[in-house]
Structure formats: structure tokens, C-alpha cells
View 1 (cartoon, rainbow, N blue to C red):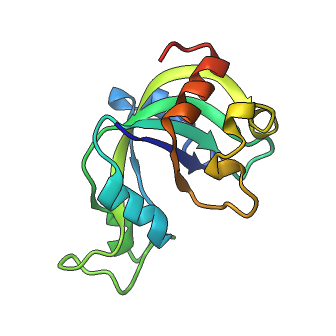
View 2: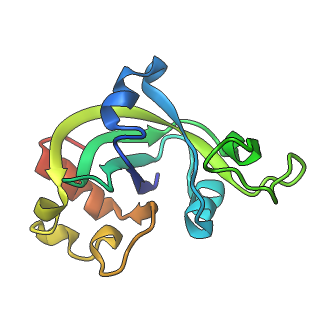
Length: 155
């Protein structure tokens, strides 16, 4: 099992939105960074743990726990000329961008970025590294356990 931190802008899709969705599941679409795409395509597996992170908002932080709920599949938004995520170079025969489904598993107390920075076990976390801007990043098993412990959730 692997662990991931996935960033979402809460005005687009919040953790509360996923909790309210059918089967508490949403498609993770619109990723347009090759490294993040490669994580989804090549490394993520159904059942992997996800720290659902609210970004590009007044108070960024971890909003909930989730899991990868599907194998990768072509991101439909790349084919839609009306979508902000349209990619004119993508074709159905050769899609460039990937989606996966994510399922909410646990609501936890919100952990702001400023608070994450105070947890010694997270000092090497990709999210907390200077210049880190990836929308999807790996989380070590020790970091996963530290976040769960901080949130009061048993692993």
C-alpha cells in the first residue's frame, strides 16, 4: 500500500463535496502536470491512502482522508473544447491525461498547513519542502501514521 497527498481547490471540489457525492467518490480530473499524471498512471493503486488537501484557499491544509477508488482512465476533460482542461493535442487513441476516482473514508479535524509544519515527523514531507507545488505527492508510511495520530485516528 502506498500513500499520497492530493491537492484540490475547495471551491472546485472540497472534501465535504466528496462526502456528499454518491458513494462518497469523485473523479480526480484536470491534472496537467506530467509528474503528477505519472503518479496516477504508474504508481497509484486501488486502496492506496490519500490525504485530501485543500489548496489555493485562505487556510490550506488536510481536510480529510480518502483512498484511491479506481484504476487510471483517460481524463474526459482533455477532449472537451469547452473545458478549462481541454488539450487539443489529446486524442481518444492517444490520451495525454489521466483521471482516477477518489473515495472519502474519514472526516478528520482540519489540519492547517501552519500546524503541519509544527509536527516533527513531517519535517521531510514533500508538501513542506521549499518550492514544492505538485498537486499530487507521495507520503511515506511514517508521515501517514503521524498525520493520523495528530488527527486522533487509529491506523
